[in-house]
Length: 140
Image 1 (cartoon, rainbow, N blue to C red):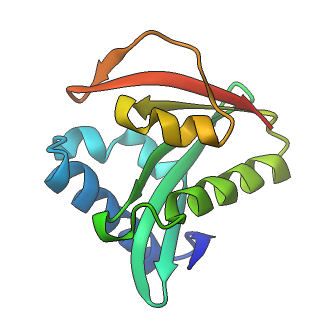
Image 2: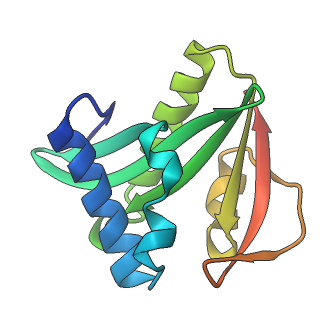
């Protein structure tokens, strides 16, 4: 498996395809909430298992803080280390660009995953697209 920053239209479409499968079809997030105005300026990541896209994520910088967003892996590739690989690639990208702190809004069922990567909860629970979340952060 490899994770890369998208470099062309096909790789970006691969990332969007994974996001649509996981968030829109599986979790029933409305498409207008999933594909948003930040996609035009975010850095997108796509994960491949051979030629097949299996995971994705995006990264933005807001006031010198890295914002990790839209982390997703196809159901059949979960619990294989794929999500961790995506996160490590994004964290490496952030470090290369001088970012020292990362934040993310974790779906509550994913909190143990992010905690295992060193993220700490910094908010109360809130709803995003009807799904319970908590904000987490990590110094890198």
